[in-house]
Length: 163
Ligand SMILES: [Zn+2]
Ligand SMILES: [Zn+2]
Image (cartoon, rainbow, N blue to C red):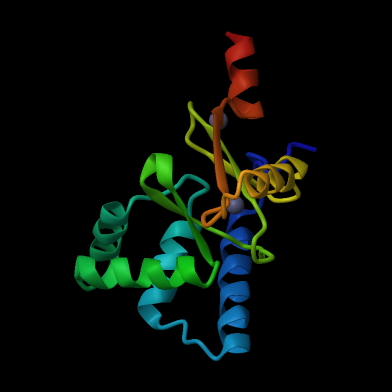
């Protein structure tokens, strides 16, 4: 089992459809609206397992339809992140679609491949819980419980080994 990294031959169309269906469901359940723009922004993110920068999203949306003002894209991203439908990857200054829910306060660990740019999410993390506990001991309140770890994914490691 490769911990959270998408298999190179996985059914990605299904992956995108699942992410969008889950987002619709989440928004319905909370009485929030997944407007057409929010949906398009999420779809643009979901098309890739690599984080996408806000400006790239504006460009891609403009290429595939009506020009979209950057401000509207930023607002859509704020919404998606606030609802837990997307994550902000700080070290890349970019965004990633999320297709599973999170408990509040849960520490999210991202494994970032330095070669192909793919990001995997590891949610069940004892390390995360330990960190929150350690922070509490020194009187620190965790606000953004996110860890980003850089390295090489399994696919890239195998490619490298074959050289
Ligand atoms: Zn996929
Ligand atoms: Zn990789």
